[in-house]
Length: 434
Image (cartoon, rainbow, N blue to C red):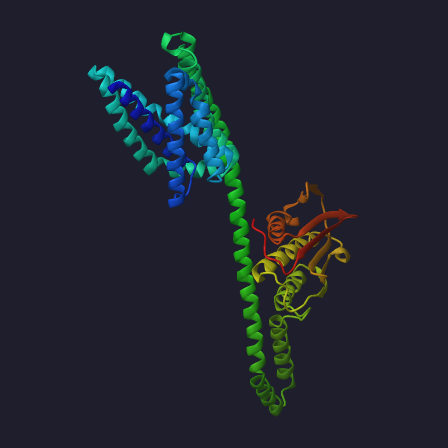
């Protein structure tokens, strides 16, 4: 009778440990409602185990364990807590693997003390210690790993799966491992060693891909920050222009002094200098939108430095419904790429960039056209230039990222030595998540 009570108690504790570790590794956000659901689920599974034990016996119940405990646990985590199936699967298998540590410590205690009750006592203590260690030091790392990508999650769950299949095949459904069969004893370390090497190779490759993606995201964020800085500088230039105009009476007073002295040359020199200063500060009005005017004024000046003619056709209202920083990044990358590509041409007649921006219905439509040298290959939907100077790299990726955030469309194509970029962004809608 006592042995039966101990076995029942131990089975209940094992179930509590397994469910708790599964929930822990699945990254479930705990709440009062969730805790109540876990208690109900635990009670239900324990009841099924007891009924199976009474009706079919312990040995048959152990063989049915995957179907009456593990599979329901996976479904419970996936369906009730809305966790991905891959994470639910990996967390339950990993919890099963973690159960082997207390199990081994219990067996070791029997060998040391020669008392069968030492197994149960050591098992219970070890289970508490293991759970504390997993909760405090391991769980956060596991959650970050399995949530990184589905592939990472499956890689993480592969070792527990192999052990799970091996354990049931050699100790539950057969007695092969306990007979000391050489092939069974050597199978586990061989598989674990092989998979360890494969895991290192695949995970390293996955980590490199994630690192490259993170680096590109960091660069795109940096470009947005740089665009904000450039926009602030342009606005400061506009403020300087206002100040310059305000101080115009001082300039006129000084010119009046030169006129009184009859020094015509000083007047000419001073006027030329003042006009140049005003031209460098004053943004040209291309449309009603202040941000677009500032950006185009800046890039017209930049294009002149590269001896490139920037021709514009812009009809945009005062308000666009596009974030100023993202609009700056979008136009700056498009114009910078186009000017850099046109600047490589030897024929000055071809060193031109055409910029077109209008509102068509409820959509912002932007396009650029420029000639180029070398070759531009369209890889999928994105251009890949053979010349770094052509500029089609992270600038293009930044443009694409912004357009996709607004749920827009983009196209990049070449026609007769001319690179054409077209963008369409729907206005008056909330941005889509990236």
